Structure formats: structure tokens, C-alpha cells
Image 1 (cartoon, rainbow, N blue to C red):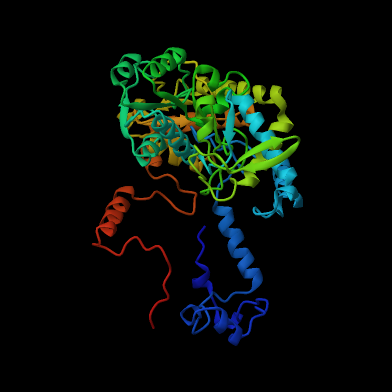
Image 2 (cartoon, rainbow, N blue to C red):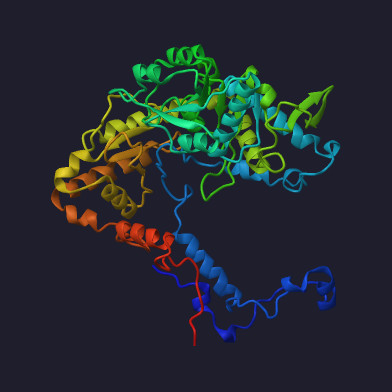
Amino acid sequence: MTELLSFEKSRPSAGSPRLPEAGVTAPQATEALDAGLLRAKAPSLPQLSEPEIMRHYSRLASMNYSISEQFYPLGSCTMKYNPVANEIAATMPGFAGLHPYQEEDTVQGALELMWRLERALCAVVGVERVTLQPAAGAHGEWTALRMISAYHHSRGDNRTEVLVPDSAHGTNPASAALSGFQVVEVKSGRDGRISLADLESKLSPRVAALMLTNPNTLGLFERQILDIAEMVHATGAMLYYDGANLNAFMGICRPGDMGFDAVHMNLHKTFTTPHGGGGPGAGPVGVKAELVPFLPTPTVERTNGHLTLDFKRPRSIGRVRSFYGNFGMLVRAYSYIVAMGGDGLTQASRDAVLSANYLRKQVEDDLEMPHEGPCMHEFVASAQNLAHEGVRALDIAKALLDRDFYAPTIYFPLVVPEAIMVEPTETESKATLDAFAAAIKDIVATAKSSPQDLHEAPKTLPVGRLDEVAAARRINAYLQGQSDDPVLRWKRAEK
């Protein structure tokens, strides 16, 4: 299935698009706008009938893959079902029709939701306060590090390093570097967990924080987390929690109780708000008492039953997001929490862990398991056992696309060769997990009997196997000014 661009489909005989009158005359436009901003001629838009445009975009949409269509086992990303009830709540006129600069007295309902959501998140992760402003996970990381940096500076403590495990999400070192810190890697032990010996060797008065997620990106619980917290705090540093894997134990245990000082949460993962497509996401950050003064402004405060936005916070790091966060995502997350209740959130995590361990057991004879189980909400397998067949993790991922499954995360974490990272979430049925396991078994059987078939996958999609090496070379040449590739926009052919 292929689809031409709307410009390529354009037919002069179709006429111009039907647009409503602008309500502005040419003289009025000239008075209101600088002459250089006015068009000399009409834009060259595609000329198609309305049904043709509708069908064009419907065909394009059908080429996309989404959680609404099939299983999305993207490891470390918690691509779980987004309940329609959340969408209905977010589109209620009283929420969707608000202007962010309305007077506080006219938005008490919205502030009440934000206040209650903050209290709920505090209870889930075990912190004193939460900022709802950050727009996604990496933004939450950066916000937490800015608060940690401000805390150290307020004490006259010049700390220049941030410790990051070698299995961490790539955004961790990026956020630390963007915040002006030197990134120091902490190695994993043979069991896949952080090496306490290596951590001890890297801790010093220069360290501002250790960035850690628990369970880690291998899906393994850091059993020595209390020892880790004690070691970090003994040097005056802080412990930051990457909330990407919170889906493993919300309602079961809390990062704040483990000793974490700052906790970011991905509402677009754990709390079922939409995920992907570049946003909007939501990455609130919770903090212990020492960091509360440095929270971004404004915070939502309650005084005698009246809710206000507090901008007068002299030690705050300032605003980190326009307005007050991605409010529609906050509504969706609160809707989910209220619908589930505390027991429901706990059960969701238990089911997520059960699903991951069930699926891991189903495929352990087909793929290599680099670490002994059990896992938490996700597991990392390896295709290294198929290397003698000339088959790589990439081949397995492409073959899954032909079998109507989205590919898991591959080649991450980097500490596992030919890594295949799978997170089934709690929202998938046993039948779906069985079908995915059967697809893995079929692919592994094909690898042993006809590996060339896997090298040619996918064969059933609009786009087949891409030449990644050639693409990398062409992009590199483009960046160096040696080529016009890649071509990122359509240009009308010269006549």
C-alpha cells in the first residue's frame, strides 16, 4: 500500500478549497500588518475535493500503528491502554474551554483538580509536594536536577557531578549535562543491578545526585536500595528517581520510603494519559521537604477552602512550563486515579509484574535471558543465541511487524548485546500475550530454517526494510553540507 502526497494528487479541475470569508478587507489587513507579512499571491495548496482529502488522510491514518489496534510491547515505555473515560473527562466544557489566564475565582474547579491530583501523587510516591508543570519525562528530569542544584547552591555547596548507571535511560545523562553537570557513569554488577563497590568509588563531595530508577531498565529490582540511599546521603548528595518504571509497584511500595529525594512521574505512562507522537505528555516531579522551597512557581495552595496560585516563592527555580502544565493530561490522570482507587492501582502493578513474568517464561527457551528471574514489569531478552544463524534483534523486530505486532525496544539497555526489551503492561489479556509468544517462537523457528526470510522483513507494510547504513551516511553528508539529502519537503517540479 502506497499513498501519493496530496500535492501529487492535486488536480486544477478540482477547484480551490472552500474557506470561510476572513472578515478582513485588504485595506484593513494593510493597516494591521506590516506590508512584508502580506502575501503577494495565494498559497499553492493542493486542489482536491473534500471526499478525496478525507480519504487521503484516512488511508494515511490506516498506515499508523496504535494501542487501539494491537499489542504495543515497547519496553521501558509502558504503552498501556488509555481509557475512553479519561478522554471524555478531559473534553468536558468546564475543563476544555478554560483560558489559562482566567481569574482564580473563575477556575476553582480546575485548581481543585490540580490540588487533588498533587495530593494523590504525593500519596503514591511518598513525597511532601509535587509540581505538575513538567511537560514530559525528560523535562521532569531536568526540573528535578534544577531544584537539586538550587538546593546545593543555597547551602554554599558547589557540586559539579551527577552519577548515572550504565543501564539508565539515555535522557538521564542528557538532562544532567544540559543542567551543567559532569556525568559520571556507575557500572552494573553481573546480576544487572548497580555495583555498590563502583558506586562507592564514584561518590565524593563533588557529587550532586545519583539518578536511578527502581526497578532498573533491565526490569530488575534494586534490592540494596536502602544501602544505596544511605551511601548517597552520607556524602551530602541527593537521590533522584526516574519514574519511567513506576508501573511496576505503584500502590505496593513508594520511592520516597526508599530514600529518594526527588521523584519524577510519567503520567503518559503509569497513569494512562496518551503517549507518543511527541506529546503532549506530563512529567510531574515530587520532592521531599528539603526541596519544597525550590519548587517551580506557581504552586497551587489552599487557604480557608479557597485555592490560589502562589507566585511568591523567593527560592523557587521559577516557571518551567508556560501556563501551569499540560492541563488536559492532568485531567486524564486524575480521572484514572479516581476510577481505579488505591486498591486498583495496586492491582494494576501486580498484574503488570505477572504479565511480564508470564511472557518471559513463555519465550525463555527461544531467546537468551541474560539475567536470572524473576523480573518486575518488564524483561530484557537477547537474540545473541541466534547469532550463528546470522539473525539479529533487528531481524526479530522487523519480523514481528509482519505478524501484526509492534516491535519491542531493541538494542537497549546497551549493557545487553542484541537486547530485546519487552513490557506487556497490565492491560493486555493472556490471549494477547500467548499470541505474541507464539509469534516469537515462529520467528525463532524461521531463523533456524530460513534466516534469509527474516533479513527481508517486513514484507507486508507500506515501507520495507530500510538501509540504515546508507541513511546514516546520507544524513551525515547533509549535516556536513556535502549533500541536499535528506529531502524533507515536497517541491513542485520546474516546468
